[in-house]
Amino acid sequence: MKYIYLKKTKKILIKSGRKVFISSISILCSIIVLFLCSCAGSASKDEIHKANYHYQIGVSYLNDNNIQPAFVEFQKALKLNPYDKDIHNALGILYLLKLENYPKAVYHFKESLAIDKTFPEASNNLGNAYANMGKFPEAIESYKKAISNPQYKNAAMALHNLGMVYYRLSRYDEALDAFKEALKRFSSFHLPYYGLALCYNAKAQYGDAAIAMTRAIELDPLYKGNKDKALDDLKEKRIRAKGIEEKDINDYLDILKY
Image (tube, rainbow, N blue to C red; front, side, top):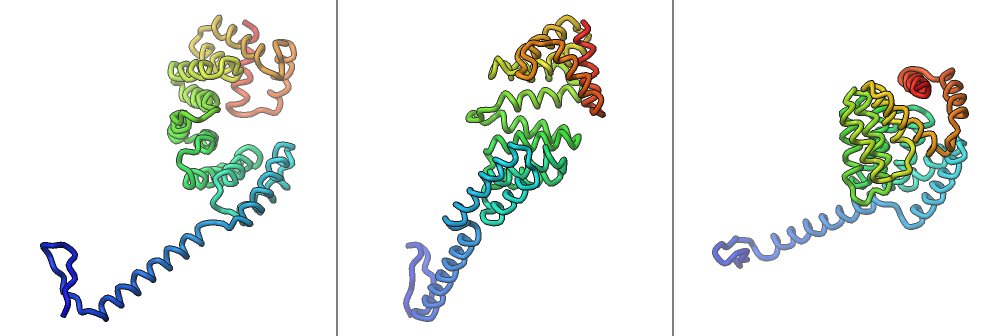
């Protein structure tokens, strides 16, 4: 009998040969299992390259508002590399903005965050999906997570989105704070001014609402300060709008009368 000492104060009795041999097999099996899991959990360099190719084509289609080809390319990319956060984020955006399938959008944004929990774009987009579903507490949490990332270049957008959720909840002071913080990050960003206008209007601060609306139209690249163009465009949008969008447009039109 031989003794193998794990610690100086404690000795474990193991038969030499057989027990050691079994232990070696166990270690080898563990290594093989880890290797197989590693292989199963990642794509090859060739698959990653092909996936990126289809992803880039999909982005190009999406930017041209060519939805079905974009969807096909993203699915091809995902099949080749299901562990890419950008592919999941892109599919989430497509489901959110183009197909209005919010549960599917939530799924892909969550998958993206499972791959990289610090991915602020996915957190912001997840907030948008929750907001569209009326899940405002979840939306607030997602926006705050995106904003908390110091490397997030589009934090002003997440702050604007956060402000709009607070506005929907009639939490006007918190909404105003979010919009103002967004403007600190990006002073020429037009969307927070529209949000400020809505909040001031809701608080019966009509002069402030008019000033914010004027500034929004000045900075909006669609109008470039042309109030008549903004008025005509809003009236046209109101014909197709419904729900909270229609209410927002009616409020904007009222503010333009001040």
